[in-house]
Length: 248
Image (cartoon, rainbow, N blue to C red; front, side, top):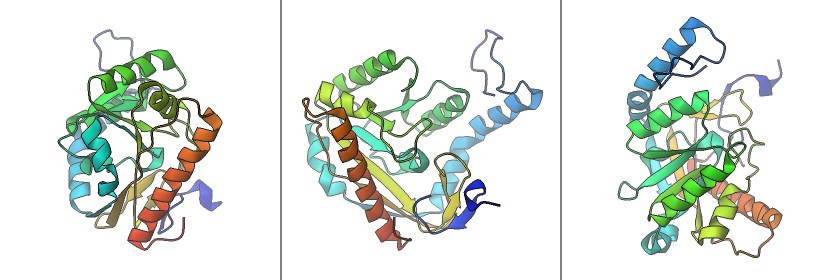
């Protein structure tokens, strides 16, 4: 079996829906009767399980001083990789309100409910569909003095390839982009498009804040994407070094 097709414990750094409505029209993705029940259980148990999971980790935070000035000036656009967002709600400053962009999908319902149960806000929208309304919502959120969070390579990749949403948002609003990445010294890489990373209980977790960056309005988007990717991968390499993991 090809190793990319199965999960494996490693030290490497690279690696249907719940119906929320009364309309009666929502169905699970595969139409099977047990699927919605399972998703309801995931929604109910997600936050308590994540709290217990996070409580078992040994947290190490680096680079907070880099973002102090940006935080003092106003709202920021916090960006992260899709495969490394699981533990971010537990490191984000509690004195800052952040709205995390979540796709309006089946799985997105579960993720949004879990994030909200952890005391964070969500903004529902897609980089592939209804991009205009999502962009407007993010712009309004920043205008109200609140941070936004975006998985820049989500929801479907390619992995570690930023899309343009956060870049255009920074160019439009003048808010700085702030990378936030994490990794652990031990974990499970799932056989998904992004090799989604599940930290092993008791692992050492390193969270790294990257340098804030206001994208110049006249900078070509492709150039900005390359620069953002470089900044975020640099932060990930720093996180890997903190945990003693394999080179990124």
